Image 1 (cartoon, rainbow, N blue to C red):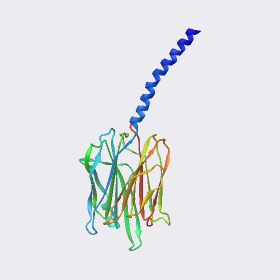
Image 2: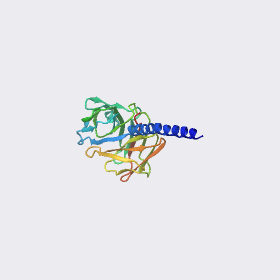
Image 3: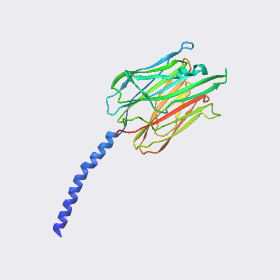
Image 4: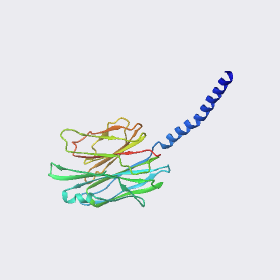
Length: 270
């Protein structure tokens, strides 16, 4: 009986000693897979009325040297009149010599009439991405199909991301809503530990856009203030457990004219 107790005690001790390294390895694997924020920056297209431009450059965007890098870029453009709307087409987005790819189904285009001159204004937002961008400082360059009235760009880079095309996204839009200065967008994440990145384009500058979502972090605000006077904002949110989240933006100033919103899930690396 005594021998049996000694044998059982030894067996339990061996089991515990064997499981401890396995547990530590599992915890280390989770830590390695955790998405990390790297860098953010934004820029606006400096135009003068009557002298529009078709190339928007974000200078010296700096990507770090972490593993499994991803660069996500939001592009926003505004144009006046149906005859000029095609100029907002995005011919290319590049990071240094590397071309970015448009995130499938991420493009949103809306329009509304400005009551003062009965002119139709168009707003477009689209997302682009680059897997494992090179480390260092490189320009992000956006080329439009033609010269545009207004444009903004914002870039966010992350470490430890899944190195596949991000496909889980939602889009939303509002144009001249009656009385409400907000836009509410829901997205259901599919992966534990994912990040949601969103970009919101607005046909106003200094509109005081603010996100009311708990744990959301606004990362940038780009305002083109010379030509079309539009705004692009963006940020990130960590979602530890997969499920539905609600992104709630409010506009503290002016009446909403055009809001185009894109939110995308970025899965952690495996």
